[in-house]
Length: 366
Image 1: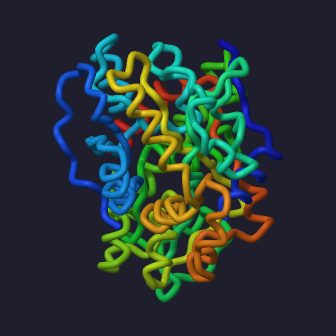
Image 2: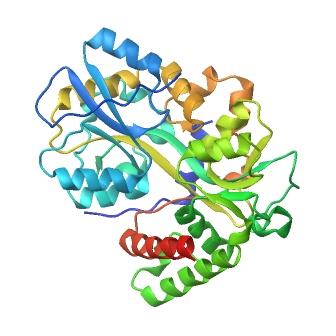
């Protein structure tokens, strides 16, 4: 399998292009062919309830959703189920695609079966994160980045990640440990995505250990480590924290809801990602899966609803014209900050995952 990286030009195109309540999780039963059912594993607030209701009415296909909050959980489930998966569609980030493909968990997307394929934003057709050996392995959904979120009423402006370690904000910050570790490595001048550390395990380990030790030293700044977007949103709303490393989506949602939050990309830079819907290899309801994918592409209003719920930038064409000024502003970045976003690569993921996971456990237990 040919691996891929994402250059700065494609990063800028994807970010520039992007500018209800979820269905209650249903129990996904053991896999067997059910032409009127589609089983989807996805994140909270990714599929609008209004779309679910209309799709089920028009198609007669029942949508069953299993919520997830972690790529690794999806991967482990599919791996355990092997050739008899219980889900038809999963939600994968571009930089994790090679891991799923390496275990033969995803099927190439037959775009000829999607009459609405042309309704993707131009920058997302053939997105490099989802293209391997000329084949497409997912329907682009939403793009985002890791940002510095701050309560503008209680914090000073800053263009550096250094503010997360300022004594002034002791016990007032929060982050996802594994995600922030990569950011800290970048802050320290190391490669937080491990691309340049291929076949350099000793260099990678030294850089990881340096970031780990720095985060342990500054644990007193952290109110709580979080995992789910709803946790960091609630901490901001309750004013339990003033600063956080967070995905752009949850922060943008707070801004759209009128909270005094700002999201920015500090001068040291950050990492971006692209979510996609992916058809599972041996999906028990492949026809229903394609009907679902084609329907969700059918209107920019659907993409706009997904953006309003998640806060992430849509991959669908025309969504920017549906969003209002406040909603567009919540996701807008100055050009110089867009330049600081580097999309995660799939290169050297095994080394990165192993070292990050080990360091994360050590930080939490310190």
